[in-house]
Length: 235
Ligand SMILES: C[S@@+](CC[C@H](N)C(=O)[O-])C[C@H]1O[C@@H](n2cnc3c(N)ncnc32)[C@H](O)[C@@H]1O
Ligand code: SF4
Image (cartoon, rainbow, N blue to C red; front, side, top):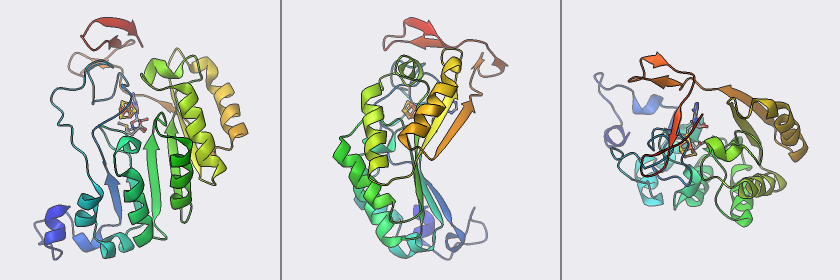
């Protein structure tokens, strides 16, 4: 992206033409407040992945990489990522404000575990996002007694308060429910809760990450470890 931005007339040998780009997947940060056992940012829900650099994009970085006329041409930017949660990025709100300012019709989307920030923060984010097409996808894998078994470190009350604040302020919230043996009996109850709270969509997801032996074989259980690498429980 940076190389192409410095040379908008990308050569035929480039992987893409800068002027043709319409969708950007934005990884704002490699930091996260949670430790989901099958997420690459940590070792089975315990220690932070030692091979992962803990980096983050600031508002200044975003302004330098995603220039205003480039943002104006885009159809969609979604902040999801592979190693972090966008809501813990220091400049998350200001980055979204900048993107909405230059992309009033941009589809502005964000994926999160929802377990951080104050209600006022969520209301402000909703005000920015709802000025155009958007969704905010909460990864909530169960109910009060089970969500933390996969979303390790997530606090149920904080997640619910975040979603309520975002929805009350007019934001479009969606719920992603990853199904495990420990929460499969709660899918319908969660679907009803999502509906009652005003979520616009409820997606039931199956994971393909029950793998072992260098990911060559599937397995019916997955070890969850603590920060010292000791076994805690199986998924
Ligand atoms: C690495 S997360 C980053 C975004 C944010 N932290 C979150 O969890 O929504 C990217 C996506 O991976 C999903 N994910 C996490 N664990 C998964 C699993 N075991 N199988 C499939 N998707 C998973 C998350 O729900 C999220 O949609
Ligand atoms: S919340 Fe997202 S980034 Fe954080 S550990 Fe879970 S899947 Fe990974």
